Length: 78
Image (cartoon, one colour):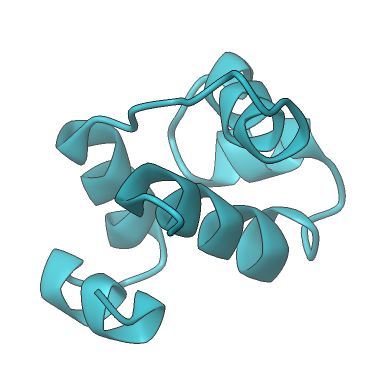
């Protein structure tokens, strides 16, 4: 079973990061550091790595997309 962090990272990366011009532009547009985007990506690429995304970071990303956290979790299916 996939854990919650992987589900969240996969959703963000597949639906939002990949559609951005670059990882850097996604980070700038969502008021987060580019290293966070790399951690999200790394969670999907490395089997033994997991980024435990803080709620505060998730909130910044959601606010930049005009989404509430509850709307985000509904979209993700959590």
